[in-house]
Amino acid sequence: MQIGFPLTVDRDRRTGVVDEERHVRDLIAQLLFTTPGERVMRLTFGSGAMQLVFAPNSPELASTTQFLIAGALNQWLGELIEVREVSVTSDDATLRITIAYVIRATQNARTDTFERSVG
Image (cartoon, rainbow, N blue to C red; front, side, top):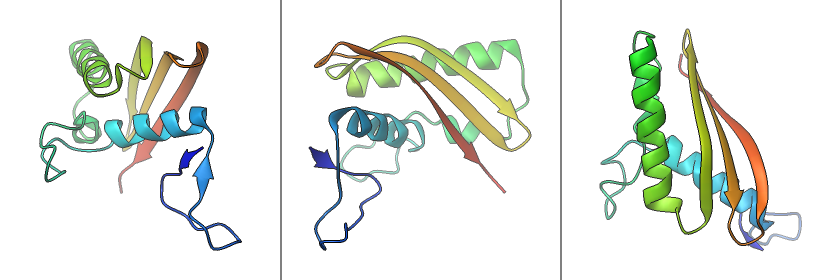
């Protein structure tokens, strides 16, 4: 069991915990929606994906974004997951990122969608 994100307190007043798969999903979400430079001791941590919410859509931007996110996932979480596919869409003020990956410890394949809206 791992500490859940965001930090919660359960009904027994203990720190909320999650299973390994949920923990990995939480780590991916933290990486995706953290802007590089935001963390004091890890200035390069993050993907910069939130900056793309208001960027004009184009095939080139989508391709570049997918490449950058896959690179950030491999750099920061490569020991935990094997990235299979990254898909990024932006509709109005909503950013949607779908990631297909395998958790290395369990060899479980997962596909998760992460979404953020601004406004």
